[in-house]
Amino acid sequence: MKRLYGTIVPIVTPLTGQDTIDEESLERLIDHIADCGAQGVFPCGTTGEMMYLTVAERKRIAETVVKHATGRLRVFVHTGAWNLKDTIELCRHAESIGADGISVVTPAFYKLSDRGLIDFYVTVADSVSGTFPIYLYAIPQNAGNDLNVSVCEEIARRCPNVIGIKYSFPDFTRMQNLLAVNGGKFSVLAGPDHLFAAFCAIGGDGVVSGCANVIGKHYTAIWEAIQRKDYELAAAYQRRTNMLGSVLGSINSIAAFKTVLKEEGIIRTNAVRRPMENLTPEQEKKLLSELEKLDYKNVAA
Image (cartoon, rainbow, N blue to C red; front, top):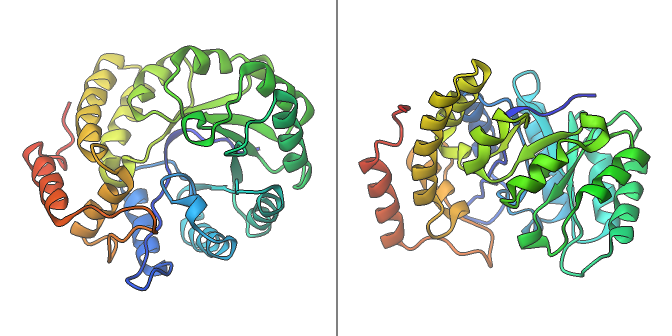
């Protein structure tokens, strides 16, 4: 089964001025990400405003990405939804269109026991073929539910197609312990951008980086340094991406990513799906000015 590695980009969802999916901009974004050297994309994730999209919109996005990215980038579609029925529908759809795999966020809002979380993922894993790879996705600060090591161990034992996890809370100890799941065969991806270099240095498989929508070449530089085991250089690149990331995430990172991508002509509008908020004109001006001052297009350690 295919796994994810390196820089995985949770792509933003380009919208038209009429609040519909902008497929042309989405294809340009895929081209941009491939040109920056990423290894994969993760459509309809948190950065893609997943919970503000309809099931039909998410299917359309997945179809566009799979068709346009195949052969250049691995595509793992995020299929977690507000309820189990929609989640299973999106999982089966992703497999049917030829995605490389899926990722499924924990159920949100209502607090579940470990038993409830295990039951959820076993049901999801059973809804697709046993060879279709699945990544768990934990983002407890948003979803309200977390995945501990013992829960992941039980899910991996019962579901051979659950091959890894994207862990998006900055708990380095938890991430390190997750590497031991399934006899050390569990693929673990860092959600926090700033832990990319450090986590991969101890055996992590990569990062799922929202900032890589905009500054992807910087993440490629980190990954290439890691592959050469030049951890000092990787750390230097990491410090620079951390500085740029703090600017991009200072107000609303999704709106910021779209603002920069629009400025560069990659997407046509920087609209976000309401009730998410756009940046004000003043905030946009400040964002672009600060990035220019940091020479953000220049990949240098």
